[in-house]
Length: 118
Length: 97
Length: 126
Image 1 (tube, chains in turn green, orange, cyan):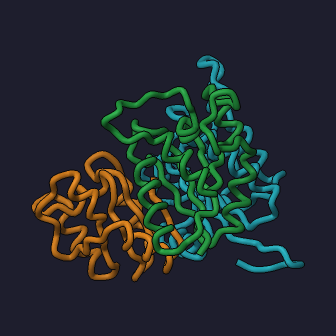
Image 2 (cartoon, helix red, strand yellow):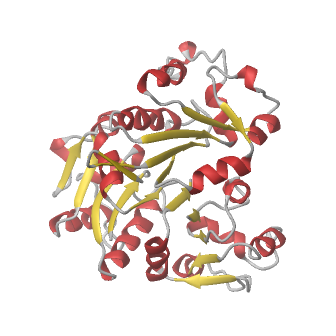
């Protein structure tokens, strides 16, 4: 099954980014394809590469980057990103800034869209 | 349709609203702070028990464990992320944010 | 979900359940609706709970220097987003009626909106 993920909250501040990640791992283990992960609202903050979380805690930014390296589309809404100082220069590796229309496109293509947020 | 609730029922109206719109037989999954709805002895027990007569009720076990909730209502089935994915396989998802 | 001329058309419902201005969710949610309108999908918006406040007349954010978006709700018609459902209970609980709203909507019982919701291929809460 093709599953799209919409993430609407930033990392650490809210559990949403963790829940989305755990769900994605479990879905892939069950043989599903994560079509894309789309960051919207404060979710775009998941794509900033300047953060340095404590070393004894999980690195949420790195998780997304690693997922991207494994072929999952990590997409960042351009309009939401511009409001929050997220741009190409500080983007985590393997993520792409894209238009909001991509989200609708994902919802059309995927069998499921699962939203994580506040 | 699978309904997920991730907000404490003491903080917001996700649970009471969801119940107003949900159809019989639709599953509900409590996760994140939504977990607090299904602890035995709180004021939402009756609502959850009534709901369980028409709708299957699930709670995400890693979120229960993280919050130290020992006494989950008997009507609630505890599942892990694998179980969450299985529900998504069978239903479209409505996340009550 | 259906197919027309080889294109997939899904039923999308956007749920507005938060008050405007206090947070950005309604504003960015509205942007999501407008963008998705270009994809020729079957779109509806449900206004539930504090979401009904988004549609109140006489909202004026000028003094706050926040860009208002109430006009955008009025313009939805032009984007072919015509299915606007408002939960009657949410209105009544807030002492509001249809006359207080800035656009033409369908005021429905929760159970009716629930049935519509159950038919959707995609539901996104903003």
